[in-house]
Amino acid sequence: MGRRYVAEIGPGEIIESQTFLVLNKDLRTTNQGSLYIHAVLGDRTGQIVARAWSASEAMYNIMPRGGLINVKGRSESYKGNLQFIIEAIRPVDGDTVDLAEFLPATDGDVEEMWSRVTKVLATIKDPAIRALVDAFVADEQKMKAFRTAPAARDMHHAYIGGLLEHTMNVLEMAQLVAPRYRELNADLVLAGVFLHDLGKTAELGYSTNFEYTDEGQLLGHIAICAQWIGEMADRVAQSSGKPFPTRTRWLLQHIVLSHHGKMEFGSPKTPAIPEAFAVHFLDNLDAKVVMAIRAIKEDRDADANWTGFHRGLETRVYKAGIGKNEGQA
Image (cartoon, rainbow, N blue to C red; front, side, top):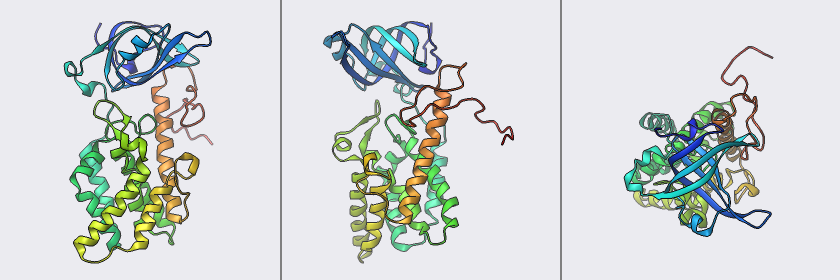
């Protein structure tokens, strides 16, 4: 039998030999006191929860987080979700496989999406905001990472190119929404959207799997980008020979610091200007809609009208009629 991608696996299958990426792993204890492994395995088509019962620390230790393993086992349905029961594993040398088989990537054209992003940013009129945005765009190292990075480890747009795709979506929505509110500073909104998740290029590692970097664990993408804005404002001031407007720097940093909306969701500040509210809700709209669509597409139970419970959405998603316009009230 040839390679079985995650998306092709259904319940009740016997897998004699297959290679997957270890996205996450945890050694746990059952109610009876025995050890078991809870892991998340994946390839470029998706992820699957895996368990190894009657496990040992030795078995756990040979599963390289962010590395590859070859597994033998079976798939089964558990509470409406597919899971893989591991019966045997062995590590795999990453140099012997094509890593592109294991990292999910955007379906979009990266160069075309980048062109759309820069086209929107070119509409910014405020000289200071435009100079700051242009300085970020001119930073080749940051923009190469921006076009490659996922937007999240395992929630929305969690694939190569996901950050670019997400930012493009929110920028183009902002272009539609901002003109409806004459008092809104559209330049602040557009720059805030462009910058809001840029720190994820440093927060997340994505060479072999999607995992938090040390910098990401210690600071988080919000603090990282707020710091970058201050540094870039100083660079712009130095190159132009005149001070960067302090209030503009504060407002852009505030939009980034508050874009998760609530402190319990990771924002050091809650939105306090109209533009910050706009960025927060547009960001959340794209994230939630994409999560709902992917939940439907990746659900394994073709006969069920509902997906399993989605942690990020805090609900199950109704699948019937996706993509259909039936004219129903």
